[in-house]
Length: 355
Image (cartoon, rainbow, N blue to C red; front, side, top):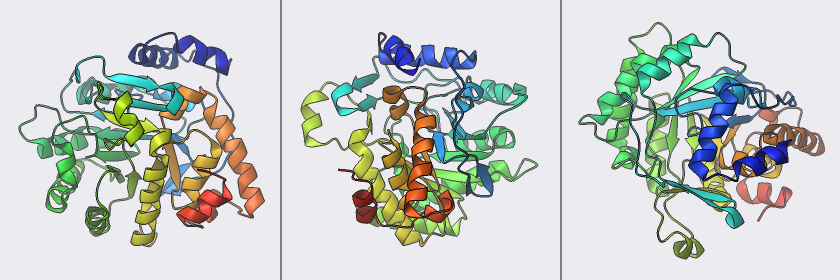
C-alpha cells in the first residue's frame, strides 16, 4: 500500500500531489500506522516518538489529525501569516529524484490566521503535539507586528509556536537573524502571547546558511530570552556546485538529502556552543533511521522531516522508529533522551555509516 500511494502521487506535478495528499489526509484515507513508543521531551512537552512533520506540509491546519495517524508524534502547521496569501508564482516546487531533493519557492501560501484559528478551535481531539509556525505577510509594512498578531491569535490553540525567520522565499525575512532585529521579533511574539491565558513554548527556526559568527549571536539571544528550542534548520539557498546546472531556471530553497551534512553539522555546533542548555530540533535531509538517529546523537531531542515523506511514503515513521529502537539497544541507551548529544558529528556519522 505504501508503494502504491507513492506511485499514484508521482503521476502528478509536485504541487498537485501535495494538495491531493492534504485532501486525503484530511479525510483519513490513509492507513493508520502503529509506531514504537520512544518518548522524548522538549520544553516540558512529551512526544511519543522523536519523529515530527516539519512546517510546510499542512500549511493551513487542514489535515494534522490525519498526519498523526501516520505515526508522527508532532505536526507543525504553517507557516501561518496574519492575512491569507497566495504565495509566489507557479510553478514553485520541483522534484530532483536522483538527488532525493526538492527545491521550492512557495512563499508562505496559506489561508491566514483567522481560518487556521477556527480549524484549531474546531478540532475536538489530536493525537500528538501540535505546533504552529508563524511568519509575516509578504507585503506587510510592519513584519514584526505580524509576529505579535499571529502569536496573540494562535498561541492559545497549540502546544508550541515556531518563529520562522528563515524561509528564503519571503523577501528580507532572513534579515531577522540579526541580533537586534531577532530580539524585537521574540519580544513581539512574547508580547502577543502575554495577552492570552497560558504560556506557550516558543521555538525558533533558523537558516542553515548563516555564518557561525552569526549563529553565536543567535544562541546568545535564544538563551537570554529563554527560547525553548531552536529548529535546525530550514531550506538552503546555497546550492552545491553540481546543482547549479540543474537548477539554473529554478529559484527557492533546497531540501532533502543534499542538505543533510550541512544542517547536521550546524546542529552539532549549536549543541556544543549552547552546552545543552536549549532544546534542539533536527531537520534537513532525513529519509531513514540512520539519519534521524545521527541527528539525535549530535543533540536533537526531536527530528522533523518533510521531503523524506515524499520519497519514502506514508509508512516512514513506522520504519524509522522500529530501526531507531534497534540502534538504541545496540548502543546501550535506555531512552532517546539518554542518546541525545552523546556523540559529536564525526563520531555519529562513523557509527551510522553515513557519507
